[in-house]
Image 1 (cartoon, one colour):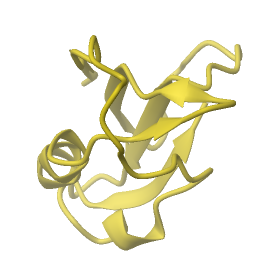
Image 2: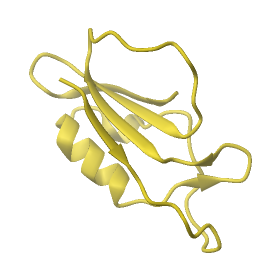
Image 3: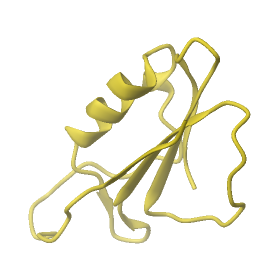
Image 4: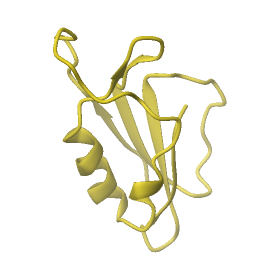
Length: 88
């Protein structure tokens, strides 16, 4: 199962949190809880830009290999718990 969410980041004039490469604080949460936690934070980096896409994927799901600085992929195990969450 893949869940995709596009975030609205039209106003970049307000200060926000810098985008990290990974999100170790999400490991162990359910995929949906991790997505909700990211939705509540407005990440923006002057080099990487804003996060506009969050995907929740199973650990073994097929995915494209393109690297996108605006995308977070949350990988979950068979119980639905986050095992990895990274930009890409």
